[in-house]
Length: 208
Image (spheres, one colour):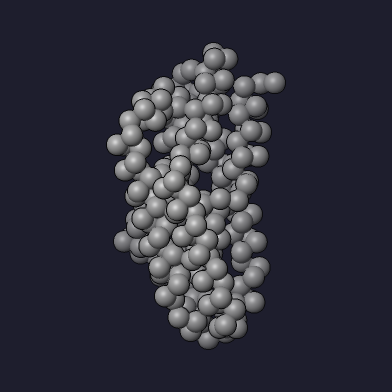
């Protein structure tokens, strides 16, 4: 099997599995609409390209061997997830609900965009599982003789395009339940369920 094809298939299967990344995208879709989720998805995609670059250049082993740096990344990611959980839990049922019964999309601005992308990046980069995953499959690509800068860019493209497709599927799925959220009680219950989920993922992240 071609090395790039092997990487693509393996990556798509792994990325499609529900996790902190996809849960964050779903929650932002429900709370702020697809534009909000897209901004976080961009940050997560940038985190993935960072981890691929680390694996490609052979520095992922150095990061893994440095407990201090690794711990800082985990703490930052876990702290952001807890912050998201707090916001979801405290969100009032009437907050963000438009007059037609749909959740109100977040305003689009430079500060909001930057904060959202950074938040997505922190969640993506702090999860050790993708880093270990890329560290195991990227060397197979390099070993096949695909070790130039152009090859690295191809890996970036595969991950970015693939993640956009997966994120789009999750955003579409989350968007379909927004009419159900016309009922304030349903919205608050879903927010609390997702908040608990973020707390659990945060704890698992710190325990890895």
